[in-house]
Length: 104
Image 1 (cartoon, helix red, strand yellow):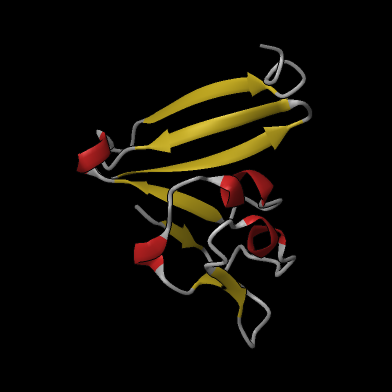
Image 2 (tube, one colour; image 1 turned 30 degrees about the vertical axis):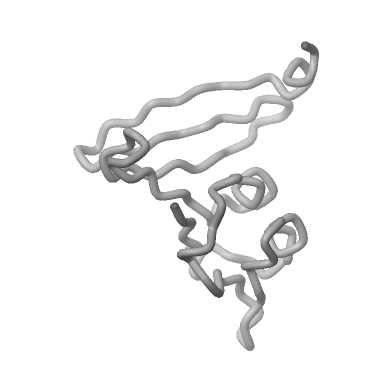
């Protein structure tokens, strides 16, 4: 499992670095985030949820049923959208109202 950080989208805010429980994300000399040890990524997706510019995606390998798709999040107000983009171009979106996410 691993994440991918798009350096063209990254604004260098460091939020992903701050929430990574494995301290795997760092900021480079250019101020952009990068993952130091991709193989050590736990797949917790904390960084995806914190990135304000959606520069991080999570690889969904065949071993977890993802068939090579990528997961990323986007937020619109209180709605957090979990978006899976498959290699065939199809997209599945699951919306979570963050006001209700910890209700149960």
